[in-house]
Image (cartoon, rainbow, N blue to C red; front, top):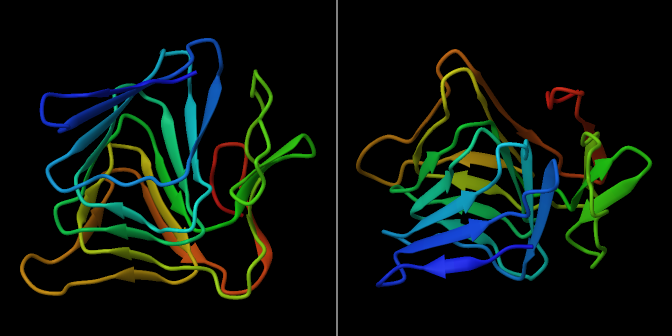
Length: 201
């Protein structure tokens, strides 16, 4: 279960997770963070991963601040593309993975797909095993931002193409001090394996 709370000018959005699951999953027709907006995912400390998929046809525009107020890892899945504007920021306690894959596989148990309106198990306690691509030309991830991860954590941008763009002004940056940065993807149907600790195989 989840709810969204808007601040006085629609500036702050808070999404509160079901505290009884270890990995929570959420579906949105669209997922955007507007300029000067903060979207805050608030979860129980028992939740170690948050999986968010976009089931509509538009890309995600991350122009403001995406925040998780716990140590949970955050996964954003939108096969239509993901764009980080110059003012985009990440305020995360855990790792971050943004992908234009069509879904995430959880072993032989479940596939969290943007193309199917499937409902995940109530208690999703298994680890993700792969990113699944079913399209010939997967959408890109474009970042004009200075994205910073929490110390010792990971930032992964897994497209189609991944473009670190500089249209003018300050140079874009991806930084994860004492952590790990991975960029990559597939332009043809296939899968990218994930290890038990979330690393790409």
